[in-house]
Image 1 (cartoon, rainbow, N blue to C red):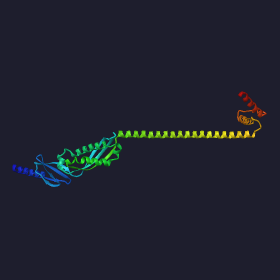
Image 2: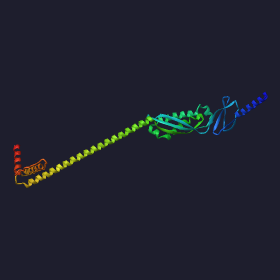
Image 3: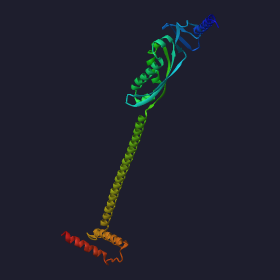
Image 4: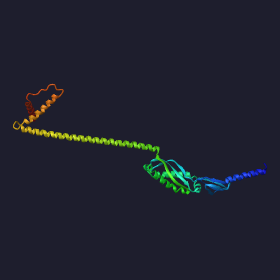
Length: 290
């Protein structure tokens, strides 16, 4: 092969490579940023595009479809000093590829950091119960807080979803201990209340029993007084000590009967004249009184 043929072959190969490098086919859903001699030159839209090889280069291929960004899990502290673990997911779309490329080094990482910072700020203004039950409110505030900031990067935040929000492991243990203490407190209160009611009922029972005993004694005393009056009326003219003899004799007979009913009693001796015995007792009482 002669030198001319080699040159022609090299020139043909260079032309083929140049044409190949100058023709670009951009797929749907992407836009390519083109730089000429290190400076932004233009944007290739989806389809067939041409560029000058060796002067122009594809600086970056920008995806214009919705991008899903996973925000890593992090711990946040609520207003009442509770520790929560939360993570999120964001859906963004590049609306201006030039700003997305030249406005920030890494827009995906920038959005993640914005969401994490905003989450800490929003949940930090809430108490534990409110934070756990206000996902929609947190999501709306989160989207509003970052929507304007990403406009300078040529991005649109379409949605931010809270994937999970839950107490941390240490917080769960503390809550379990608190719940156990609360259950124990309630059990103690219930037990004390039961003891209080039992004591009240017992006191009421004793009071009622005392009232009934008093009423019974009054009734017995009234009956005894009526009986004595009847005895006095029946014994009028029989002697001044006849009623007293009757009452003492009645008590005496009851006492003898109780002695006879005792299991230890073997022999019971009754006086032949109970009336004279009672008179003798009265006489001794009378002498002592003198």
